[in-house]
Structures are given as structure tokens and as C-alpha cells.
Amino acid sequence: MKRYSAFAVAREALRYQTGWERAWRKPEPKKKYDVIIVGAGGHGLATAYYLGKNFGITNVAVIEKGWLGGGNTGRNTTIIRSNYLQDPSAAIYEKARSLYETLSQDLNYNIMFSPRGVMMLAQTEHEVRGYQRTAHANNLQGVETKFIGPSEVKRLCPIIELKGPRYPVLGALWQSRAGTARHDAVAWGYARACSDMGMDIIQQCAVTAIRQEGGKVQGVTTTKGEIDCDKLGIVVAGHSGVLAEMAGFRLPIESVALQALVSEPIKPCMDVVVMANTVHGYMSQSDKGEMVIGGGADGYNNYTQRGSFHHVEETVRALVETFPMISRLKMLRWWGGIVDMTGDRSPILSKTPLDGCFINCGWGTGGFKAIPGSGWGMAELIAKGHSPLTAEFGLDRFREGRFIDESVAAGVAH
Image 1 (cartoon, rainbow, N blue to C red):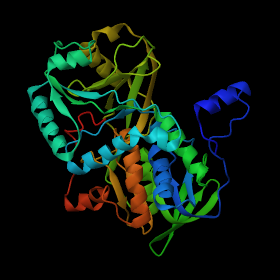
Image 2: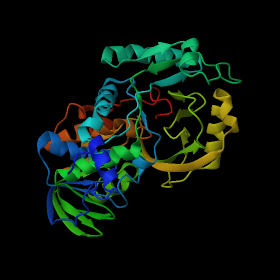
Image 3: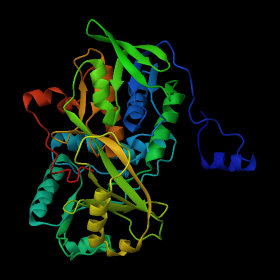
Image 4: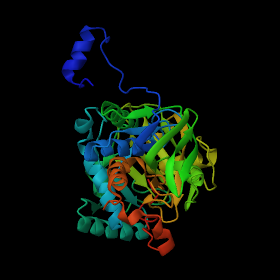
């Protein structure tokens, strides 16, 4: 694989862009792999990448029923933060955030990481106390956050209205080293690196059955034939329950649609990410100038990838109160993604009742920010059978009552 660089860009400009290679190969599946990862989204590709980088396991196939990064990885709003309340959550999200900082250099692919800072608005006295508690917890965890007052909120985000008609801004939990990244570029960068290590990324290949014998995984049946493996990783977000049923077990998750939208592009006016959990909306500005807006998940289980009008109305109404200037903008695009929610709003990274089968799911509406940390821990779990990052996120916690409750600290769970 040729390295990307400023010199390569200049060289190809002189050659009329004729010398670029494919970013990743498009192979036919082999008969058997050491590891098969089902799901070529950010988490699946990151798992494959760290299997190769950290453990030298490169006889790996990443199978995707659609196109690479076409699920939630390509449908989210790119927020990266690690200011979670519980210790296991803070550890895996902070690992991810720190990996994001150098991911462009590690992958030789510009993921456009922007540590612009994330603030979570406190608009009730209850939220003030909750975020102050989270700030103290984060300091003990080694996660750099602080609670700031209204004047500092206004300085960081001049377009905000502090005295809204329903909920005034009383302060915010501020993480200065949080931010955003280009979601497609994260998937493409991991895919390119995996392909360079000799891994096979097989698109348009749906898994129709998981084969097992004597309680141990043997392989998968796909629309491109049967493929054997020694170990299997299921990393398919909202469709995790469907794959788990194929493997013979059930998951404590529910799948719902989460929606977002972007406005028409405008000149730069906001260089931070703002989350307003009380009114249930959040917003940032993309590099193209669009205002990236997100809100709540549907209140009923479904597998749609489109929005619903009542949620858009609710979200936009709330954000217009907080940012009056956006009332004049036109909506450019509107979409949904299928998210998998657990009861404690924390993920599952675990062995399963089927020997040799591992699962990574339950990230709810906050999966993008965790991609590098999730891949790091999942790769270690598959390779060694145990990982400190994933130890608390096992399936057995639901049977034993060891919940990792992030329903409050996650706010709108993004």
C-alpha cells in the first residue's frame, strides 16, 4: 500500500490522478479464516485492525451485508467524548478518545479529528448537581472535565441564548479535549489498514446462518457460500438480536431508530459541540458549514432508517429556543439509524453461550465515540479470552445485577 502524503498528492496532480491504488481490495471469500467479524462498520473494522496490529492475527474476514460503513457509522453525528459517570464507561471511552487523537497518523489516513470541545448544558438545578458530580468522578478517573458557569458558556458559544423561554442555561459540563471526527473517514481508514495487512473485507455478503457443532462455532452460511472459522465476532449494532438468535441465544437489548438532520451550509458560527439534554437536542457545525442536529430515539421498537416528523419537530423546537438564529435555516438532509439499547444504557462486549463466539453490541446512541476503544478491547477479548477494558461489560452482569447505569450520565445518550 502506498503511503498518503503531501508529496503523493502533488505527484498525482501532475499525473492527472492516474496513479492512485484502490484503498482496499475486493476479494472473494476463502474457505476458512482464523477469525470472522460480522459487520464492517467502525467497531467491526477497528476490531479487525487491532487483532492484526496488537496480536498479529491477520487471517481475518470482515463480512458486511451491505456496503462498508453504510450502517450507523455513516449515519451518526460524530460526537467524541469520554465524560461518563461510571468507572468502566469512562475507561473505555477515554481509551477511545485518546486513540482518536493519533488515529490519522496511525492509519495514514486523515480522519479529520477536531478536538473542539463538548459542553453538556445544565438547564435545571438537578442537572447542575448531576454534572458537578460527574466532573468530580471524571477527575478521579483521570478524565479532564470541569463544570463551567453561564458566562463561560456564552464565551465559548456566542450564538447561544442563556435565558430561554422554558429552561435557562445554568452552566455546563465542559470537556475541552472532546470533539468530532469524519465518520466515513474512520471506517475507510480502518478498512484500508486492514486490507493492507492481508485481511479480506467482503461486502454485499449477508450472513443467513451461524453453524455450530457440540456447542462450538464452526462458521457462517452467507449469500456467498459457507465460510469456516475458529472464532466469530458479531458486531452488527441494531441487528445484534437477529444474529444472536441465529447463534442460539438471546440478548437483553431492543432496537429503535434514532434520527438526525443537517441544515443548509452557512458561514462558521459555532466551533464547539453543544448538547442540551433537558430539551433533548444537540448541535455542532460541520466543516462544510452545515449545522448537524440530533435528538431522540423512537419510543417503539423498529428497524427503519428514516426519521419521524414528531421527533424532528420536538428537537428543532427545543434548539430554536437555545439557538434562535437557526430558526431561519432550511433543512438539507434528514435520516435515521438503528441503535441497540440495553437496560442500563451501557454496551455488551462479551463471550457468549456459544463457544468461540463473541459479541459487541448495545452501544445505543453513543457508539461512534467508542470505536477505537471498543475495537481495542474486543480484539483483546477475542485473542486472549479476557480484556480489562471489557471485563465489566459481559452478558453475565444482567443475570448478576451488576448494572453499569449510564442512563443519567449519558443524558440523551449520545
